[in-house]
Length: 245
Image (spheres, rainbow, N blue to C red):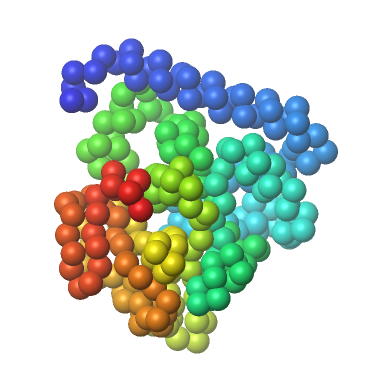
């Protein structure tokens, strides 16, 4: 279908998204007076943070020596302005996602995935529909998981879910590490969700999470690029079906 779309359609859409990003910056300067510099620092760091395998937002990469208490208002400004969606680490799902959330450990997603793409490649030499062709034909040469994960975060938030994830890091034995992209509550049970942007062979973290919290969790999901399938007790769904979670 892409071949039948006029290049001007992509050009107009790209210009509009760049205009929206410029309006965001204008609003930050106008309404975040007093801490606008910190808001911009966080906003500009989002694509770089999401492109890493470890997507938890690290303030140290924004500004050396930065502290959470200094940037708390900046994070909340972006959330309240509905520019970003934050996702907190729920350290013990057995006692409830909100009750065990670590507010200092979070991931930040753009509220609009299309704007994330434009924000990410703002300074790159992509024109008109070249960027969209690169995405569709897997020629971006970046961690495309950031785009898929952001899209799922946007979809879950639009469906009314608050965003939580689970992360356990064992500095002594890395085999004990667990990373679950999202946790939601369905039918009074916690459902873990893993997002896979390409073919995969294992779901080790999901298996360990299911074993650790077997009495707490309900249905487990993998959101990926293929057809609906149930395998190993895990429901696999294509990304466009995330809206039904």
